[in-house]
Length: 137
Image 1 (cartoon, one colour):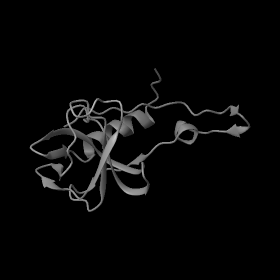
Image 2: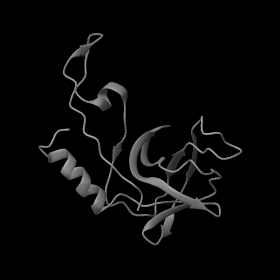
Image 3: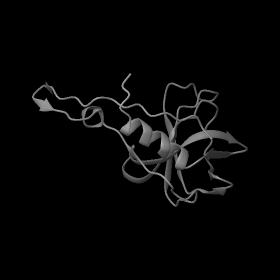
């Protein structure tokens, strides 16, 4: 399983340049996420910031491909990114080049394959606790 975290940000209720924002996503943009998706998807965009040659980590790269099941993970081949790309989102149901629904994050790659575990019950539990907790840090 990849490291996962949820950060809850209080809604912005002030006006900025005459525009009233209600959430961080409304203010700066963002993607939704989903739980319980199949590891097999027909149209996935995998983003990453690879840092090993021939890349240097300064720019993002993506691959579009279908995924197949590899145990509890999704697996994608034909994506030649290197180390440093881990943590990049895997998007389904895309509505634009970099917008869609995040269903997994890249957690490892080797032998020409990239691997990610679709968000499941553990991530859903973290999200529920963060969303409905009365604890504010």
